[in-house]
Amino acid sequence: MCFLVRRNICCRRRNREHLMSVDLKRGETLPIHINMTFPSLPCDVASIDAIDLSGKHEVDLDTNIWKLRLNSHGHIIGTKYLSDLVEKQHTTRNHDDKEHHDDSAKKPHKFSFDKDAENMINKVKKALENGEGCRVYGVLDVQRVAGNFHISVHALNIYVAQMIFGGAKHVNVSHMIHDLSFGPKYPGLHNPLDDTVRILRDTSGTFKYYIKGACR
Image (cartoon, rainbow, N blue to C red; front, side, top):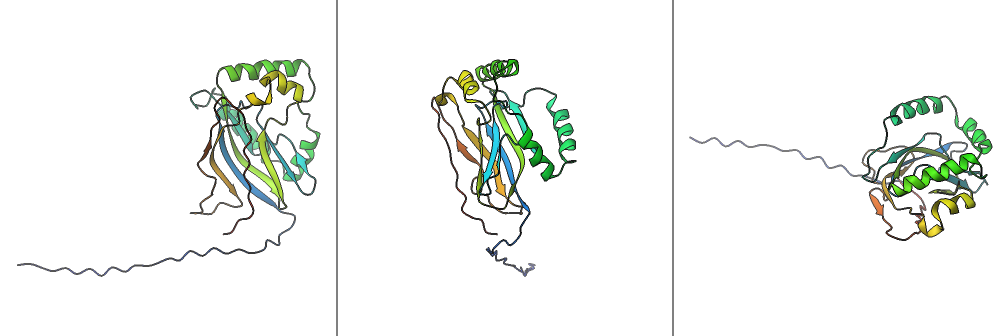
């Protein structure tokens, strides 16, 4: 004896719509989520800078931005980084964006050559010899106006940079973009630059990515 079992399967189709609208908000910031690895650039010289059309130019931003030293195999170096991150996160959460921007303008940069600069030069040279890299991640808050941000060695004085690298052609900005997104996180949204890999071998170069707009 045979029984025939009939199953009724109900299918639901979801249509995803992408809408574009003019952003009328003013006075608010746009979060940029960054998670990148620089396998040949030590953390001591990696600098995140931002500039926009209003004339605001910030160098070596560090609020809500973390940098982790990596060895030549891509593994995090040292055991103190966890406590450092927790302490820094607690400190930055107690300051608003305005306070950070005011303080960053007064923050001394690596423009003078003194004992500290000499120590940093020796430290970075050793890191380069050991093949150290850097993992940069966090959230960069920028104004809702046209502008750009870049990760480079611009925070260094040109003479200090010359003593470290011996020339621009030795600055290796090879990188892997794990996550680079603009605005609040949205489930299922694909970010075009995610998983981008740009590796330089025995040369130097500059990589530029242009974002014209975004729709959700």
